Structures are given as structure tokens and as C-alpha cells.
Amino acid sequence: MKNSIINQINTALDAAEVNLAKADNDQEIEAVRIAIVGRKGLFPALSGEMKNVLPEDRKAVGIAFNQGKQRFQKIIDAATERLQQQDDTGETAGIDLSLPGRQWQRGTKHPVSKIIDDCVAIFRRMGFIVAEGPEMESVYNNFDALNTPADHPSRDPGDTFYFADGRLLRTQTSPVQIRVMESQEPPIRIVAPGRCFRRDTPDATHSMNFHQIEGLYIDRQVSLADLKSILQTFAHELFGPQVSIRLRPHFFPFTEPSVEYDFSCIMCKGKGCGVCKQSGWLEIAGAGMVDPQVLHNVGYDPAEWSGFAFGMGIERLAMLRYRINDIRFLYENDVRFLEQF
Ligand code: PHE
Image 1 (cartoon, protein in one colour):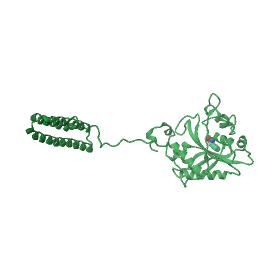
Image 2 (cartoon, protein in one colour):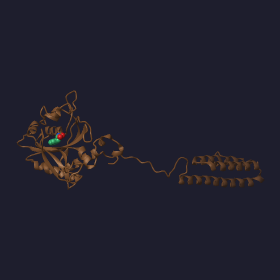
Image 3 (tube, rainbow, N blue to C red):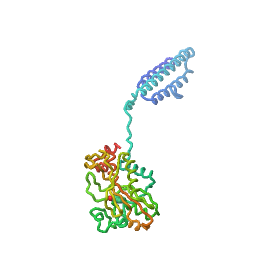
């Protein structure tokens, strides 16, 4: 009996030593531990045999048990330590802790959205609030109420997208002027950024779908000088204090007088370059004093109220600000382009 017990202890520990030298996770170590010293493991079973051992042999068997337990603890400790070291150096199967982490690409604001935000922030500081209107408009809001003659070329289906029900995709943000004036009493100070649509052939400077930001200021005794100072401040805020503006006479059906306004070229500082076509000036947008007929159309008394309006192309501003030479870059959604902003 004595030799049988001692042999079983040694055989089991030899096997455990070999197995634990190959173990590559904590669960394997734990399984071996349970098999040897767990409640239903080998050692408790063998100590149940003690009563069958001859009294003179009991001491030797007891010593074999104690030595066996100590040896087993060493085997367990060695295996645990080996696994611990593997974890520290990252050698555990399948995991290479020296690899660089995965980069999560964060989205950025589109340059068009950035310019809209900047413009809105500048005008808000001057007391304007944001107004919005739908992209699908009535002919009345987009043309009639804005005093556009029935035979005006911009109404042509070759220039404007019409729906079967007679409505259209707005060709400008100016119909928001009408919506605001029809729903509110003066004084009014709004800016209206938004998408516009025209049947243009796409090229480096034209897109069928583009953005404008409209401004409308209605109060008592508003003059062209007020318009000029607002536009001058806007130019300084957006492009810096070195930029000057100039107004040139122009025509729009809904403003009188009408102007186009230019910024001095931000590239060459007015000296003349490729971007400003050697003129030293950049055409930015249209503006003017709201035509009394338009005030009349929305039910305002032109004798009491006057005001100015302006509208500018957002893409043009974005292209100048970010030195983009083709408007199509703004709509191709190529991440290599977009991630630069
Ligand atoms: N809506 C005009 C355009 O698209 C611009 C403009 C707006 C002109 C407001 C005068 C006043 O060309």
C-alpha cells in the first residue's frame, strides 16, 4: 500500500509538471490544481487511503504527502510566473502589444459649412439673426414678389428648375426676404444661409447646386452708407483689416439702387494677380436698397420703412479663404480633400 500511494503521488506530479510547462492560460493551471489538490482531487483521495497503510509505514507516506504538496506548489508557481512574464512582454498568442493603436478617423466640418458658420457668427455680432426658408419655392416668392419682370431671363426653364406643379428650386436666397417680411413687422435684421439651384453647366466656377447667404436690414432711415459699413466690417472680420471694399453700380429687380461689391484681392493685396485677373479686386456679391415696390408687395409702407439687402455666394468665399481653384472639389466628397479642413 505504502509504495502504491508514493508512486501515485510521484507519477501524478511528473505529469502535472510536464502539462503545466506547456500551459498557456490561467484556466489550464487551475484545472490541474483542481485535479490534484481540489476537494475531489488525487491528494484528498489518497489521504483517504491512509487508514489502509500499515502503522509502521505511515510516517514515510506522510512525508511523501508533504513533499508532494510542496513540489506541487512550486510547479504551480513556476507556471503562473511564466504566463505572467509572457503577458508583460506581449508574447501571448495572437496579441502584439508593440503594434501601434488603431486610428479612429474623426469627421471634420465641410469647408462650406465652416464658412457659413463664420459668416453667421460675424453677422450675429452685428445684431442679425438667422432666418431660413425652403429650397422648394413658389414662383411668387422667388420672382414675382421680388419685382422680377415676367420676361426676365432668369425665369427661363433653361435657367431654373421647375416642378410639374409650377413650383421651383429657389435660384437665390432672396425669397427668404419675402417670407420674413410677410411674417414679421419691421425692424428686421436677418441673414439667411442656404442652398440654391440653377441650371448651369458645371465648370471650375459653376455648380448647379450652390449656397448663398442673404442679408436683410429694414428700419427707419436706413441708407446706402449703412450697407457699406456692414459690408466693410464683414470683409474685415472674414479676411482681415487690410481688405477694402468697393461698390459698383449694377441692376437687380428687387433693389434700387443696386450694387455689386468687390473685396480688394486677398491674394495679391490689390496689386493684380491670376486670381483677381490682374484687376486687384474680387467680385463678391450683389446688394442694394430694398426696392419700394418690394416693400409695398409685403405690405410695408415705403414712406416709413427702408432697408438694404445683400446676397453672396458661399462657395466663392470658401474658395478664396481656402485657396481652392475648382468649385467641384467642394462636391466630390473625396476624403483626401475633405480631411484637410
Ligand atoms: N439674389 C441676388 C443674386 O442671386 C443677389 C442679391 C441679393 C442682390 C440681395 C441684391 C440684394 O444674384
